[in-house]
Length: 257
Image (cartoon, rainbow, N blue to C red; front, side, top):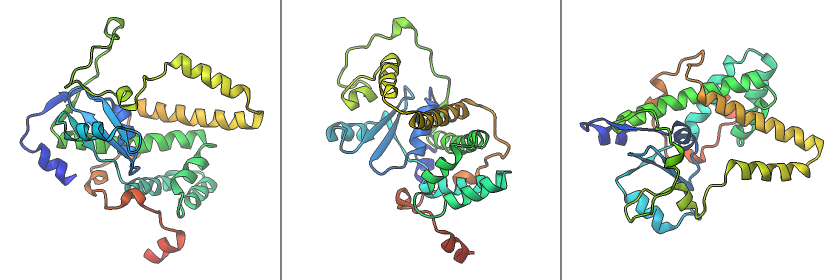
């Protein structure tokens, strides 16, 4: 964060039509093999995965001033969000389950698995986390002299692809080596998969689909949650090695107290 502050100091603010959903994904994903960049003109977020993307193209993106590297929120910080959320849960048995879920390695997956069965608290968690991610994103944009503006609405006439040029913006489709599949094609593939799944597994698929739907709804909700995120959430920079952060066990937390 300190490097970002020095980078944007004294620069004039520029309007950027930010893709908030893609930017949130980039700030949330701190896997070491994933590298995300914001195109400072189009507002598009580009994701580069080691071992999949062409190394030469990756180097080109990293050295292109039109792309700004996105530093994700550390696992350590995201773990703190779970710790802060749990006391807000009114259901005592659920609080106990969540406290146990974040004990030791695999905390993030277990925390999510517990919430799948609790629709209301799951939606509150998504809103809580999205709010904190928003604080980080807004601070990062301001530090880099960028002012978010609404994204343009594309019409049917604007859907044809221009011919690529040497200095053209790199698209996620070009980076992955294939065009994005259409919604209709994905739905057809999903129908084919569901045909071979039993009733019990269908319940699991439905629960996960509801989980994803609730997450998207939380992102689209502009209102703040009942506990307001503050500047405190961006004052602590990511710590080295945080991508490999292993949550403490209950014994370690007790000893720390």
